[in-house]
Amino acid sequence: MNKQIKEVKDLAPEDNPEWGDTEFARARPVSDVLPELYGQERAQELLRPRGRPKLENPKLPVKLRIDPDVVHAYKAQGDGWQTRMNAALRHYAMSHGLMR
Image (tube, rainbow, N blue to C red; front, side):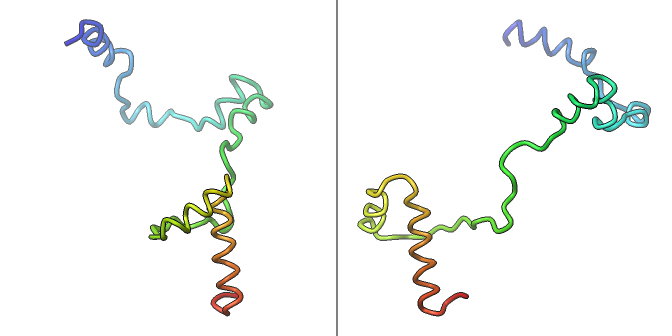
């Protein structure tokens, strides 16, 4: 075993002990603690949601077997080929009364 890893393992229990009932009883939500530590404005920055917003109507992942020539034709049009393929499928479904 690597000596450095062994040293870290030996220190870990003291540096990061398991929590018991006492620690959980006095724990507070981060939304209460951050304003005390950093002020309200900085706390709001740290607590704001990150990442892409959730879509109202998210797309579904589907495994679909498509002929290679069709895939190549869409890919040859460049980026956004999946979106164009989705639009073509939507147009077909709507024009054939398969969806409203």
